[in-house]
Image 1 (cartoon, rainbow, N blue to C red):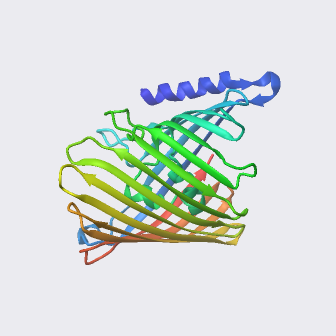
Image 2 (cartoon, one colour):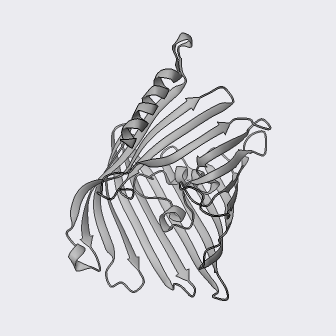
Image 3 (cartoon, rainbow, N blue to C red):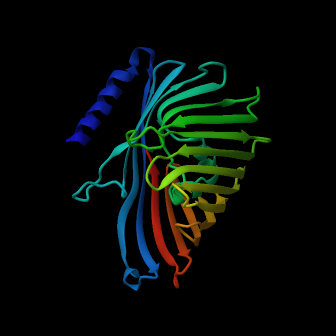
Length: 331
């Protein structure tokens, strides 16, 4: 019932938001989906080997509404394999919901109010380029959520836009409602020395008030190259979780290296390797992660990507390896 109401609201917004007298659409409806067939090739749990099936990892339905030259709104619903109800059926939730105020207090400086992406993800995801296959490393290991609810400011620090910034103050509750008085503060500087190169350095800090964790500090860097036929990058992070009382600190380090190259305008080869190490009183372990794939595009909005990914943790005799056929399409 809730899903039907949401669909009706989106349809109503579309009908009311189209200014036909000016021949100009004020509302844009779009979406994307990631669907897979996967087969477990190996696992430390031998019972998992040979498991296979069809499924989807993500569905976006997005409405972008242009209020004026200065104001715009995005509302996005997500359905995913990680968000289901008690019956195991999809349970859509609000992924993005923000008001963007362009050139708010000066030219080239925008304010975002609501649920949006922290500065840590926007650039790294664009350099990696294949969110359809995997999250960027910080999101994958869960040190920082890809969404938060708060106020963000993004802009340029010079006329040409070679130096840009992003700051955000948010609930530290991802897309969920605020549940405590604590907040998370994010900041990032971006350098664009040429049309193809990008460097970022940033971090975030959260005060925590539960019985186990006292605060979290995260720092991250990225170096990327985005060319016409080849793109590559390296991203690293350091995360320190201070535990309550005299229990000490858990620390996590990670680095991700990735690249993609176009064989032609319809075929792209993709590769990635992550290394993560965890140390402290709560955990002492490491993980190696890899992914390789070939993306085939029969249409600019449709990709079929045979790929293999695997992960091996310290202490495991056998790596978990999965073969997948991923379908990624935008509409």
